[in-house]
Image (cartoon, rainbow, N blue to C red):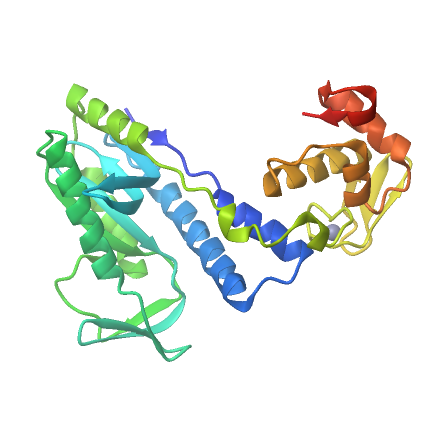
Length: 305
Ligand SMILES: [Zn+2]
């Protein structure tokens, strides 16, 4: 038996929203930075998933869990439930040179102290242990910070800390692969219980200041996100990268963007027509919506779902 993914890692909703907003409006500087870090973090987590997914001893893999214990929320990048111990991984995709001094982490690039991933890990592990105990599970937890980026370097790196550096990762994964593990009902029920306790946070409030009329309209290229897209017989073509897409697919993609950014807005022909500035026929938009979505409402207030 191989590892089983009980909870996958879809691209976080907030990241998807931020990417769309970034293409269509000027984000604040701190939001831009946040988007960059979030995208980078997600990329690193996916890289680590490739490694854990290859492990042979049976285990349940839970990705990106948001849990609550003692009124404190905590987020787990990867939890590997297998025969004692359970493994908790905090994945960091930091790139470049960092320094460790007096228990603190500094980025040499920005010459600033950064969040200490060891403290983050400690907090997470402690809250998870309390949660497991309250649920009646008494398994040991082994927790690690994984620095996944091969371009990461930590000067004065501390000894005896639960850190796995990029160059140690292959050996570490081999070691995990050699440990035998037998799963029983207890492991399964714990895994399922944790998945059922996973919480979601809505990011919409945070970005509600970006109203629909503030965003730049037009179809964006599916590949390079350029607005320089022109339409011709049932196709749209990007003038920057040359990517060609069916017209219907481009319109439906635009509908998907509106729905993602404004889940409560009614999809009408006029709205989609305005959004897809580069398509100059309202009739075309109406046809695509009619053929692909469910039409609701009366003649005058038609909307699509
Ligand atoms: Zn393009």
